[in-house]
Image 1 (tube, rainbow, N blue to C red):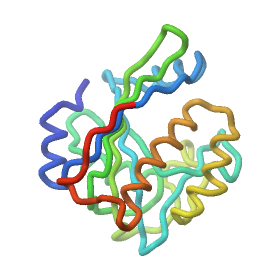
Image 2: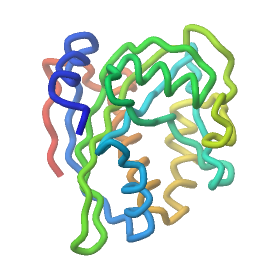
Image 3: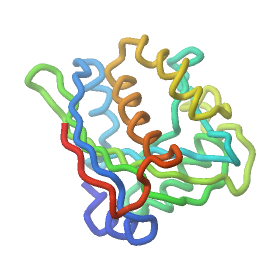
Length: 200
């Protein structure tokens, strides 16, 4: 695993200490196999980006899903990349936007399960702002569509569409988004001293 403690500590020094949550999600054999197929170089993480352009939020749709199944862009670091470097690359590939990271919002430790089989994973969630580029994916093999939305849309019809899909990984994305939105909303306890680890 090449995302080690030193990378996490560097991100926390620059962007603040995130809220930490522990989750478990049943995802079934096909989805567990899909996650395992992404584990090049022993990868067991993703970076998820809430990218704002003013009050608009950049969202992506993967080719295998129909509208309105949109979500925040995400991807993995390459070996040797910092969180900042990987986030900038992933944002550009998936959204066409140049970004600047602003806050380390959330670190989610999740166990994906299929009966007795399981895989441990970590999602690192960041708030970012767009500083250049145009909202249009560069990697069109991975991203079918990009749109600007709002937190209200993300927590309304989009959230329901993800849950209605019946996909365990999309249900996890809902849980991850719910936790991030609670931090992003005004008066949601964003002071780092007040953040506490939450175990489920």
